[in-house]
Image (cartoon, rainbow, N blue to C red):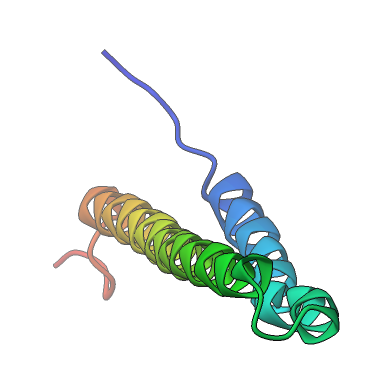
Length: 100
């Protein structure tokens, strides 16, 4: 059985993940909800918005971590496939220096 892995595609996927991660890092739910909470100081709504913000902050943190892990795993996979391919190529090349 033979199969080929397109490591360039894996690396392109890592680039895409990095771009998504950068966008996710810019999401600031607490900042977006702050004006609403400020408009209703001391209300249950303001307290509820803090809870909503905390839940979203935790979810976004988990998403950032998962994206980082996925990117790292794809990088390791691409590096490993490339290393195996290189080792295989070197093992079938004739030794340099000629024969005696």
